[in-house]
Amino acid sequence: MRTELFAFALILGGASASVANAAPSAAELEAAGNLFSITCSSSFCHGEGGIGARGPSLRNRNFPPNYVRNTIMNGRSGTPMPSFKDALTPNEIAMIAGYVMSLSPENHTADTGSAEAVAAPAAIPLSDQALRGSDLFFDQTRSSNCAACHSYGSKGGLVGPDLSTVAGKPASAIYQSIIKPAVSSDAYPAITVTTRDGRKFAGIKRDQNDQQVTFFDVSSAPPVLRSLYFADGIKVEPSTGGALYTHKLDGYSKTDIADLIAFLKSAGGDNKVVTAQDLASQ
Image (cartoon, rainbow, N blue to C red; front, side):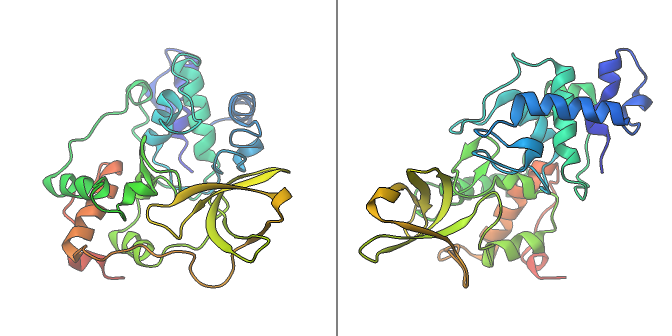
């Protein structure tokens, strides 16, 4: 587990940089967890211990540390996630970011561990290949563009996960996720909604209460956000069996996909060229 994120040297004030890299004490970890509980764990947000509620689960994710801090500070446009840069001190932001990273003990994404990173994560210029990938990711002339479902940082759709978080994965693993997308996850549960007259909708659940279920209908491109009511006789079940959806890759060459993956990996500061050969499983 990366411990630099806690940046407890900031809390102590004037402590040496080596202290920032020291493992947090039980008391420091408890304090960070308490602050998260007060700020982020309501049923409308991420749930107690980051298990997920209206907001996505924060457990066992591959979030780059700078992404976590930037999201806490600046929020995410188009979502209920607010900006906390005026509500929390840099020390408190560092504590919450560290706690979020502690929820993913297998996340080995590198971190700068600096006070400057807490205040303003550095923007890394994109390579020419990553720029081409960015254009493809957000290309609204394609109904199957990535941003119709996925976000990258603060931009894009809410159907699937933020793809800036896959930056640390090998290009071949990202490619496999594109051609064989996961059917469901705790943060993005796949469901089948059956109406009283037998119609079926396959979707990604956004919210559910005693009155209705709200979900993204993935049978259309781009997906449509629908709300159906239990009073109308609907039945909601977890989706099982085959893939709920596929990424439509018609019109994308291997070079295009390599460019897209180069863009995704750039979120972690990796500006290495991705080739078509890199997409092959190792």
